[in-house]
Amino acid sequence: MEPTKSEIQAWFEGLQDRICTALEEADGQGKFREDHWQRPGGGGGRSRVIEGRVIEKGGVNFSAVEGALPEKIGRALQLPVGSAFFASGVSIVLHSHSPHLPIIHMNVRYFEIPAQTAEAPSIWWFGGGIDLTPHYVVPADAQRFHQHLKMVCDRHHQDFYPKFKKWADDYFYLRHRKETRGVGGIFFDRMQSNDYPLDKRQLFQFVQDVGDAFAPIYTQLMAERADLPFSEREKNWQLHRRGRYVEFNLVWDRGTKFGLDTDGRTESILMSMPPTAKWTYAFEVEPNSAEATTLDHLKKEIDWVGITDIAR
Image (cartoon, rainbow, N blue to C red; front, side):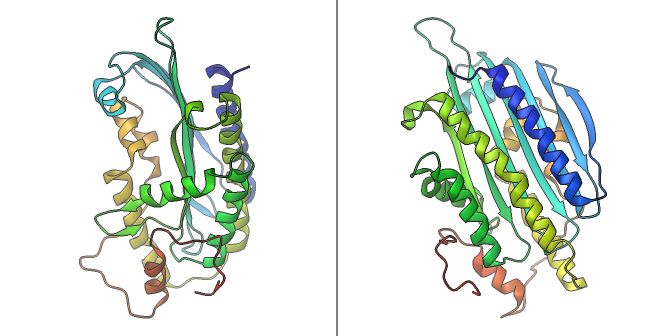
């Protein structure tokens, strides 16, 4: 049977619980603070924020909202304005104390407009993705990250990884800076059975696998990178890279715009912002430095899985 919206919502709630437990254990000190909130137009969510030994600021949010589709969203999605809608998902952003531990983002979500009549069937889709934003790009870490995502994708469809990897390269791109936000990952949106030889249950299983990949990927990075020593120069660079992250989220991110346009909870929507960031006018890096090397890697279409010169 097709998964119902209640089943999907319940699974997202459980995913939030499992990820929070794994992150608390890996951090060793921080505990999530939880806020329950209600959306005026219908639905609500649970926002959880952590400040710990390893994670300087992190958020793991669950939401399930419903009501009448706002005009601005209806026009953007080319859907009937005022239609009843339901949307649920989990969104995560983590910022570390250490410049050697990357920023990571994941979102998995479901959207539905129930059937109104026999002639107007329900409209539904899944979306989401996971991407990594190192302050200093380590090719070996980027390769392992992409290998893990490719393995998840290949279990469901051979076209998923190349298609969603390219989509992430194009989506997580700061056009005004002409650089990618990080080393990419996968991104997918409006995933329906019409697009793939998979039914709704099978597409949901893919989304579940993406969600379950998050904790193993990041807790391993935490164990390997969190306690490496760093200098004041490296910390300063981290603050500049965080500035780029802020620019993307406020200028280009569709999820931020969707949340604000549907009257979501502002504190939860903007939990992705780092605790501190830095913008220096006309900031330039030294040639042949580690910072310059990182900038060289912030490009689209790098085949991270196939890299053989891993030291580059």
